[in-house]
Amino acid sequence: MTSFYDFQATSIAGATVEMSQYRGKVVLVVNTASACGFTPQFEGLQLLHQQHAGRGLAVLGFPCNQFGQQDQGSNATIGSFCQRNYGVQFPMMAKVEVNGARAHPLFAWLKAQAPGIWGTKMIKWNFTKFLIGRDGRVLQRYAPKVTPQSLAADIESALQAPVPYA
Image 1 (cartoon, one colour):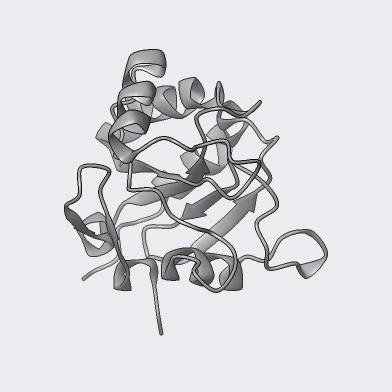
Image 2: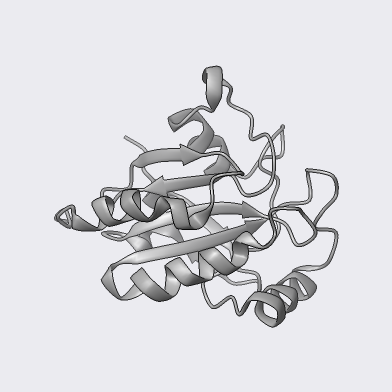
């Protein structure tokens, strides 16, 4: 069975990132944008990272320019923006597409594992979030308007799950 750990992405700095390096962790995957009404959620995502990284949470940001062209900058520009304006220290990946024929394979899998409201497979907007359990399976999908702070109970529950044997 395919799991989160079977995928890879490119970091915002251009390095290959194997998702298998997050084996046994709880992961929050977010498609982000730098010029969106939800962009201030970076602050809450960074807070989740600070509060829970030591206990096994990994927050991963994936910039996307598919919604209103709200992340038009280069990867370097996006990375600088996130760090300068929101103090982002969690890993940011290179810009991806999340819908359509060129959707990143990870997002194609995430959408299949956790369809949106009424079973839709498409991501509707920036800051859609996917919570991955310690076993590499999708636990929950969250709409863009769901704030990072409101995920605290779900994250806490996922962090309490035992780490499966590799």
